Length: 293
Image 1 (cartoon, rainbow, N blue to C red):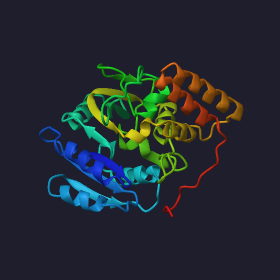
Image 2 (image 1 turned 120 degrees about the horizontal axis):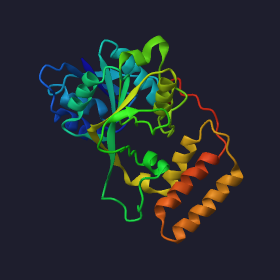
Image 3 (image 1 turned 45 degrees about the vertical axis):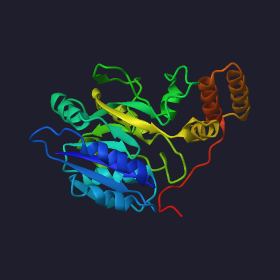
Image 4 (image 1 turned 180 degrees about the vertical axis):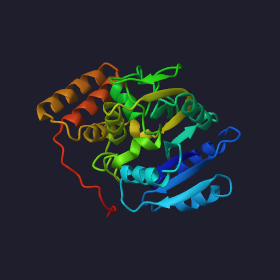
């Protein structure tokens, strides 16, 4: 039994596209699977979109009242405890037709692996921006949700770039003894928090768990136009920097460096500088343990 979980918050339009792509997946004969849609206090038309697919997909709708992506993911983990594998994707992702089959095949072929990650490519609305000369920068990969270690599947080793929340899978043992996603990290309503997925997998590796990259589990993450702005890059950096000791001086220096990069036509490097500037700002702790008000 495989459980696919989509955690969603106020993205009804993109959720429809995500569910349509999952419905188009080729499911291997004999594979039992279910789809969980965890509604994390949406106030738009999310419930109506889910109803459109209830007769087509093996779908269960759950409402998680504690706002925060980590709360929604932890709810999915609890609800799928009887499954042999829990696979997450996001509500702004379009999976390829072999996505489910690739996860099922890897889980069978790699019994030693405890968690998995699929290949994720950025899907730019309106086409790839002209200023993006080099997308393969660590921070831009995070900003655009791009995870592409190549066409060959392989074991994930300590020190490797880790999978992203848009396509990751876990065996039940990963959640044993209350081991869950940290609720002080990750997106929480309009708070663009980051890092709960990476922190969770780093913890698994430190505990001796093994990971595996599935090149054939390909999906595409929508990159909305707002993600291309300097304002979004700066706010993304602030979210990434939570828990990091920063320096206002370094923040200013990164902004000045970004202006120089922009002046020589390197919009990609300029946005990377904006992210790093945001990371340097002092962070306040946030409480995301209850409903969003």
